[in-house]
Image 1 (cartoon, rainbow over the protein chains, first blue to last red):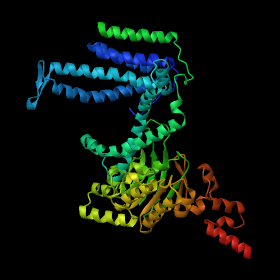
Image 2: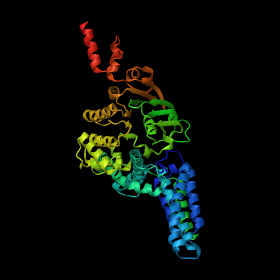
Image 3: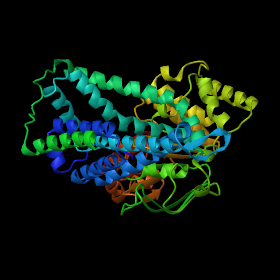
Image 4: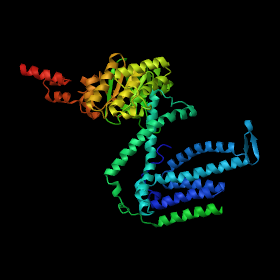
Length: 253
Length: 269
């Protein structure tokens, strides 16, 4: 899933869609995922996410995102089925742990929701430039630039910190820290002491970023400073209709 | 000893072209070898292949008789020390003493031995043991990172652009310490963009371009290999450049002192 939040510069209908509609569309999919209790509808939402990937010419990324989320979901699924005790027992494990029908169904619903609600937000940033995202938040939603900038910077910094962490892990491996171990629990234990160098380098990066923004007149920026205008086209209305249909579907099905 | 046998490497297994292409060379114990070339030539990749952080896609990397494919990188740390360009990625403890002990503890060295080695390095470098390494200058932090390698007493030291961003004084401190280690038999493999530094300290130069070694020679010859310099987009140190342009015997000068004595000789004759 490396670089899954980077913008992919391609020409597709999703790239051309108004950024506001893209935000609206992604939020609608998330809401639909949390409203619906129907397993098939949730599976349908995952299919919609994949179609978004296909239409945005980022299908490979959508697939790798799906694979990554499935791996995380396995962990959640196991955790859920171990702790839900209501419903008919499917089979009993030692130490009084029972796998129940309710547990399996609830776990399935949670992981389907997790996958269907996470994918659109990650795909949104793959087909939308960060500057467009913050501009449209300021111009169309009236959010103060400081907050819009904070939001987009937080997203932009995720891959930066991920790279920094890889660099730190590489440097520590070279010193003898066993990050190349196959034992995942040992690895987690080794990562914790590295929060210090990561924290320090993050603070340094953020501080230098803040100074750079400050000297370029960050505080002088007003709502009208962005030169781009985001007009609505026919395709944007189609986007609103699909979003509304998804919400309606989640309530009705 | 470091030996590369037809090593190719690619970061992306699906990529058509390798980052490192069929590279072979051998470095004997105690040599000081520098690798030079433009950005993206594969210098850092080669250095990471030496300490096992990267494993070759094909071919073999042999370090002191061990094929790195068979050993995890963390196990090689006792034999191969790696000084990164950015010391902040290496430093993770809140005092210099703890920082220097960190690698030794990981290597399973006894407490008494760790204490003795750490105190020896602290004395040698003139550090204050309880100083927070995050609160000292960049050059000092680089020295702490180097000291933590030295405490492990590795047979090989890899320096990946160790003096980037350091002033002359800090740079000299680092390089003199490296030279001292080299003089007692530690093999040094340095990736560097500072040609003056390469000329001053290296015994041998590997010139890299587009993932291949295009020249493997002593500095005197390597910097005079016009085709290699051009291909690797390298400008030789100014004193060599001046000698080449002046010709008439001046091209043999490698240092300012040599050039000065040549000029003095001509003036007197």
